[in-house]
Amino acid sequence: MSHPPEGRSAVARARAIAGLVAAATVAGLLWWAVGTKGTALTGFDGALTDTTRAWADGLGWPVDVADVIGEATAPVRSALAGAVLVVILMLVGQRAAAGWLALSGIAGVLTAEAVKSAMGRPRPPGAGQFEPDLFKSFPSGHAMVGIYLYLVAGLVLVHLGRSRASRWVAGLGWALVACGPLLGLTRLVLGVHWPTDLLAGWAFGSSVALASALVLWWPLDRGWSRPRGAGPTGTPRDPAASPAPADLAPDQLP
Image (cartoon, rainbow, N blue to C red; front, side, top):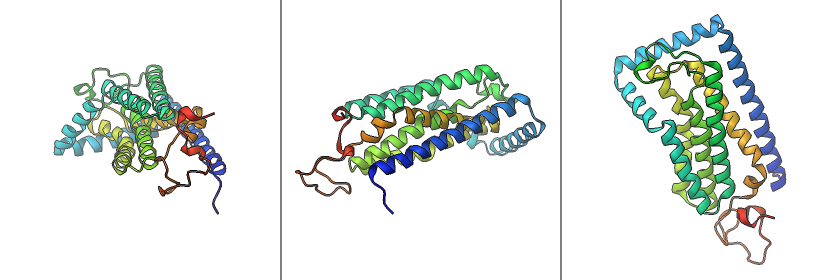
């Protein structure tokens, strides 16, 4: 059974709220569990870290690849890439999408730094080879940025590519959607984060991304524009018909 646009929007918004509650709950539980230093959690972190490091160090190349990826997606470089995309989105008239990416990025950085400073969790042994700061392990900043920046950027590009019938833009978006969440795994390969740091990074990053989307839900829901003169499936639309809300650019919204 199909739903009108308003109904689909309400369902999507409800799912986003449910996802936010779930992600925030997981983040909070991990914060509490790591803070109390439970035996089971410590054993899990230690066992998986040792296994991963033994595998990566034994082969050698996974460490080299993870190091290159980590450097390429360092906070400053990621912020610069995000800022460039925000400017591009503004120039093509997608102000709501630009706002989502910018808000998610800024909130993500502030959240990561605040939680890292509050927890002060030591990194795994040997992390000093790749990281100078050894007491900001929880949560993983790379795992977080993979969600609140790269995944969000991917979703934006997928929507933009679909609305403008651009396969390469949508393809680039799907690549970011697939690779963004995996970014945190490189930190486990390098041995600079515990597994629970990654889980917390994904949970905190998801919370930031969903909260930012909900803050801007109204303009995001109505801001995607289709190619001029095209209907919902890309076929010519009757010029005399009233424009659907999704056909309006953000600056045309009431």
